Length: 562
Ligand SMILES: Cc1ncc(COP(=O)(O)O)c(C=O)c1O
Image (tube, rainbow, N blue to C red):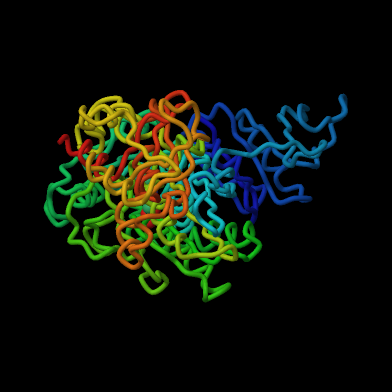
């Protein structure tokens, strides 16, 4: 047990406060009997004493406490003179007192006083692989690099700080919060550091890792059914409210109502993005859960430049994009009610994103950028890619990556789970599996030659019932993709022939389009899904050799198991 005695009107350093089990105050060096009784009642292994800088009251109070038989450490930068041994700040004793330096005066060390001081100031990184078809800048704010691993560390620290200031949370108190996990981690870190008890209430759709993570910090987790109305007594909101009333000294930060939630983003996330983009940001994209991030960042950015577009990324079915709150699988964002922390006035547009697009995009970002992101990050990236299509080189799109994919290894990153939910139709599928499902009576690679007449090309496509063919320079089997000169699509040829029938007798080389983009035979199915977003067909390479064509209808037939 440690007791901290604060002498006079002074703000004691945070690092001393967090190490104390009890903080007591005295106006001056004369100690009231009640204060001495309080100190004694805690049977302290150490009594830390701190006072205003440059004043001697703290030393006198420390000597007084020592005289009453307590083990005392005086924190000061002006140690009292010691008759026999010169006081060396840091490790000296005077009058039976341990003396410790109050401020650190050696050469500066790069060290934070606690993990809580490391929240925020996350980096911005360019997503130039997934954004390679965009003309605009596509930049991601790496909130998964926060001290507790998510964007929620910011409001968690802010809400507890404010509650302590307002006297709503006292030493030894309990935090109760309905949270989908990330806010819980932020609160659990603050609670561990400042010795509060923590009870978290969450819906049963949350991943096992998230629940175990909170328990690892020493928090208690109560799991409630997802498929009930918020007003139902079984809902996680209702259960959290009941527990807040029942537990003495309980405080519910309530991230859905607490103004500190958006405010933390007005104070930190918004200014960071403005600074990091040198004020060049034109579009901000974020998932909407409580709405804290989008509202706070949106308010700050609009105050700097009202032309900045604030875009929400919302799971299809959630209210923000016009849904009725129907359940969806992506975690942490979307709602079935309108929280007070959401400021619709700053949001210019909300893009609805399906679970499939969120999850496959998250996997794509992980594999193409090497950034392991959660499902809601996939939602934001998908929405940013969508709006980015219309933008040019002067546009700077910043999106939020709220947390890491580590919390979803058994869901989004688990092929079995993904196929169970119909996001992938079989285990460990590759491009080769899709190609293998195509009609067995087709030649390996239906193709046409550079000098063939358009009329004959159309006939070949009809015969094999294909809508796209590569135009080749050599007879298959082709050695490399450089032997593919271009490609033609039946629909395009037909419309050209319709407007100018003479085209039918021209060589296809004169009307062909550039070669199709390619994918590897062993690549996972989501690579084709991504590629077919931009192209109508892709060329499949087996160790560099072109072996087949896949179209959107091939992919659809494969995914639906036909
Ligand atoms: C994974 C994840 N993404 C996004 C958000 C949304 O942030 P906000 O509540 O600030 O709208 C949350 C919030 O819980 C989250 O957990």
